[in-house]
Amino acid sequence: MTAGQIAVVVAASFAGALVKAVTGLGYPVIAVPLIALVLGVEDAVVLVALPNLAANVYLNVESRDARHETRDLDLLVGFGIVGAIVGTIALTALPDEPLLLALAAMVGIFVVVFLAHPELSIDPRTARRGAPVVGALQGVAQGAVGVSGPIVATWVHGYRLSPRAYVNQVTFIFGITGFAQVVVLLVQGQFTAHRMLGAAVAGVAVAIATPLGLALRRRLESDLFQRVVLAVLLVSAGALVVQALA
Image (cartoon, rainbow, N blue to C red; front, side):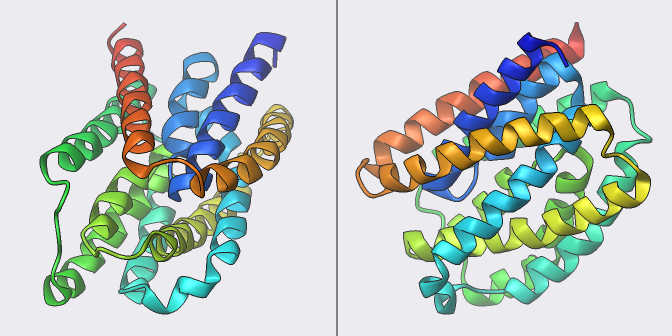
């Protein structure tokens, strides 16, 4: 890895981890598109997998007092594991361009749904029926492009949980499916030397950004921060589309 590539990994990981610490999601959504611009999608997905797993575990433990408020974790996680295995296997078999466009589309869908339905609410019966499909889709997305945040965030947003319960639910789902992804990557031998170097560098950035993000969560107004997150997501999606069509 060149100095410029390392700088991008550090900056993208720091920004993504900062957002994730505040909202429970955002690290892969922000980091993978930016890192993919200099290393490619496959390298970016594999590189981010380990530090993202560590961040999810930490944030889930930090918000464990709100775990009793979470819903449908059995279905979301169970089907998510299956989807993550399928998606991770597909990662090495697909060319970059469809992955880039799929990632950009997921980011765009998240932004559109959030803006169009800021008060979206899903009743318990509908949530129980839809959870297996959502779990499978987010697992496939996590494995194939390293990003499942838009799918999970939109669905769980409709549960209308408290902020800490929201963070606990999404990080639990991301953590379990992310672990399944890491296991498959290990079996496939995807963690090469340069990717492990990138993961270590990203891990340092995540370790620094996470406590700062937790402090920001207690101080920043949620509406303002959500607008910043949406802006970053749109920029990332646009960059991916440009790269895919270039």
